[in-house]
Image 1 (cartoon, one colour):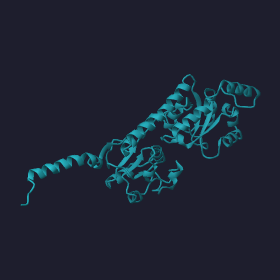
Image 2 (cartoon, one colour):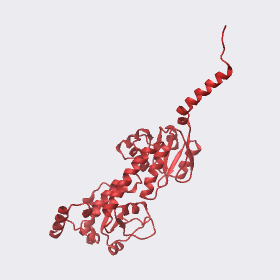
Image 3 (cartoon, helix red, strand yellow):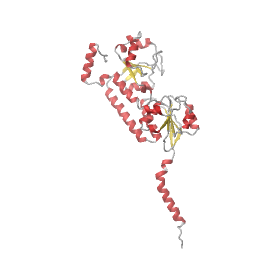
Image 4 (cartoon, one colour):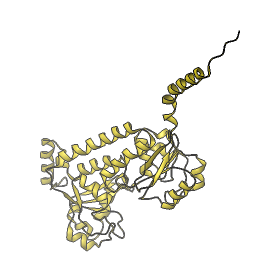
Length: 323
């Protein structure tokens, strides 16, 4: 005689199996909801495997998190690290190809207010593609954005570890420079015509972490200056963002220019060339801040013997004098 399992028993077995399976697989398939840094609500797949980055700083951030293999596309301007150059490009950050982005089937697109158009994010959102837009305005804001991006991708611990290490470096730099007066610098965005930065810009905030401040006090973010104004303020250092000419070439160029050659900073050789990373709100910015601090406060990083040698060379006129 064939026996049958009671209906209630089958239902109980099915329920038990579901109870065991759900914790293992259910949570991994549930989409996640976030609000990005411009207040836009987005829904991100449970697992983010395919990322398209629309800005160099965002590409660099994803690589710094150890997730470069998840970048399936970036822009023509994404050049750090070197591996980013070999990714499929979707165009320039300001006008990327929506078709090229969609063709890459991204789980997540990363954008930023500093360089990407709002229309790009809107177009992608209408197509059902999640776009997280970052909006950092300070160095600390960059650190916060890095943590947020890690959370959205689904690697919060990696984000916390990276941000923690970067913050430790900034704290160590602050401790070393805490008793040093601010170096007054002219940051040159463009030389002909002369353009600099205002005190409320991202670059000005980065300078302050290196115990340096812009000699420009206007409220304009990107003011144009006359050489007469530079003569009046007499910066301690003149700082350029690297355009591949090199520090020695820039110093030689300024020494060949009338009026410029007579500035105290030029006479002393206080011309500094920093990486283009200074304009990018990404983890590589901390490297630039540290290097700039060494350039404008060498005495804070030198041993007593090195300080003595520097003073002797200054007196002999064989090396720049440090104020």
